[in-house]
Image (tube, rainbow, N blue to C red):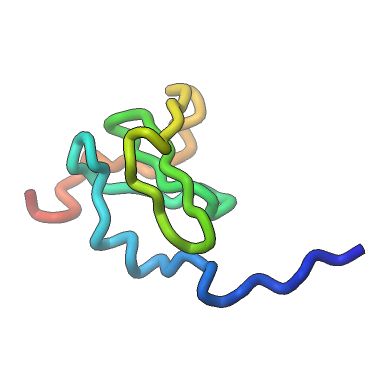
Length: 82
């Protein structure tokens, strides 16, 4: 049985990622490999992306183990000039 096609409106636009920051630390977010979460390395939190919409509420976030952050790019750089 095949899954129904994904509605294009439910796909997260990666360009949007440049405008979003962690609500706790105000640092850059990284899209997970499966494109289902936005990761805040600084806060060690993962925010879900539901139907293409990132849920950047601390109530929606889950804690991320430090070991699982090792594969993500280093986000301590001065990416936003701040």
